[in-house]
Amino acid sequence: MKFIALLDCNNFFVSCERVFRPELRGKPVVVLSSNDGCIVSRSNEAKALGIPMGAPVFKWREEVEKYNVKLFSSNFSLYSDMSKRVMSILKECVKHVEIYSVDEAFFLIDGGANFAADLKNHVERCTGIPVSIGIGENKTRAKMATEIAKKNLEHDGAFDLASKNPDEQIEMLKKFPIEDIWGIGRSLSRFLKDNFIYTAKEFTEVPDTWVKSHMGLHGLLKLRECRGEIFENAYGRFEATGEHVKKSIISSRSFGKKLYDFEEIWNALSYHVCRIGEDLRSQNSVTNVLSIYLYKVVTRDEAGSTGRVQVSRTMELPRPTSYTPELLKYAYELFIDIYEKDAAYKKAGAAVGELSQADTKQLDLFEDTLCAKIGKPSENHYLNDGKKQNLMNTLDALHQKWGDRFDISCFPRLRTWVSRKENRSPLYTTSWDELLTIS
Amino acid sequence: MENYEIKLDLNEYFIKHPAATFFVKVVGNSMEGEGIKGGDMLIVDRSKRPKSGSIVVAVVDGEFTVKKLTQTRQGLFLTPANPKFKPVKITKSMEFEVWGVVTGAIHSYL
Image 1 (cartoon, one colour):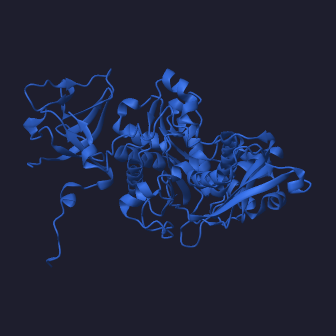
Image 2: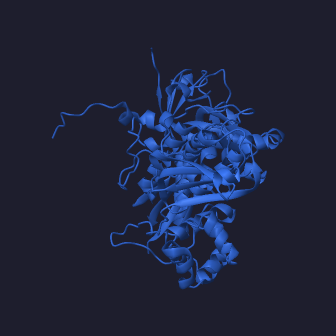
């Protein structure tokens, strides 16, 4: 019986660093975003200190200093190279690998947890990267199984949900929080919780009709997957479940009071951009158009009866994206364009439109990193060819991890405490001059 | 049937398992008896199973070292190839792992 498995690297960026710095195992380590602003990868010890994903590092400098948390700037060359290695080893062992992000891949599996455990050990032996493997009847359940494998150490990094008997499966689903279900983004999980659905188990008990009318086709397919339906097409490959996509996504909120300060308003605006990024990714979409808008307070004469006027800017993005840091970058440019120093603002929001389905491999390349090195043309970043292993977007890890609990913008100008790229590790695997040196 | 189109490739010669192969630079002369000099580059395969007599990159208490792995009746040792250095016995109190097996060493004369 063939099921779907997911291989997911544990704390991927940190793990990459630890391969060449074995003395950092068991210690709190974090990796920072490309401007050294936010934390984008944490070791388990750093997580235990309460440091959240996506946190601006300057806010945690006390803990960093007190507990000697090791900081690394992002080393995309290294992470990209290590990712290729992991995927390559995986492909040597199993057939039908579908790379999902820089540190995750789905594949078809014949064996159960024992095979998965052997595979996990083999990948770690060959690359130094610890991984978790989950097995399920479909991708959603495979992801669930991987989460369970990660969080419960007694499973030794491999968990087969599909082979458990129904009672055991129900037990696992009872403990599985609704917001951790793949494809259920922030707004959906909030909505479900408002309807007293807190766990995967509770979700599976909701009638189809209710889910379909409140969550659309996307929700219904997700429901069926959570219940354990097997998805496999005639060729023995598995495809992403067709999902109903929204055509545009808006996020906005009134401040509740007048705001004048640039940073405060950018804070609010970037929050909306981050939420949009997350919602885009949860429905596997990318956008071509970004708009931001502010409600500016004006006299009633100028604005008619409302006392406010909407100012906005819209921009067509150079390439389709759902990548939050890129959305933030453009949103920031647009914001600088409309912000007026002495004006009062009451509301901020952002919107994206012209959404299209992303391929499972989203390549969103920074010009100064991977794209330039490999000489890949920047327009062509959709690989629909599932058979070819091509350039990985190391930043997909940020897609997956950053969106979930992100609650504050990484203000680009705030670079006082940790400077840019100050702590980047050597290019151990991509530069002759920066090899690991030993005696 | 001869293939007239082959171009000899050092990668093919030295690297059997690219995904598990790393390059490492050596400092010092602790292994010069094995033909490894300071400044040489080592080809390290993480997927190869180490045996007694393998030259390995090991991590001992968090530190890297390159030595010959030897198993004797007295126990497991990391053995240098230079009389100025002493073999190190691996004890239970040490954190020890083989990071990878050295499959080749490249010395550049330039």
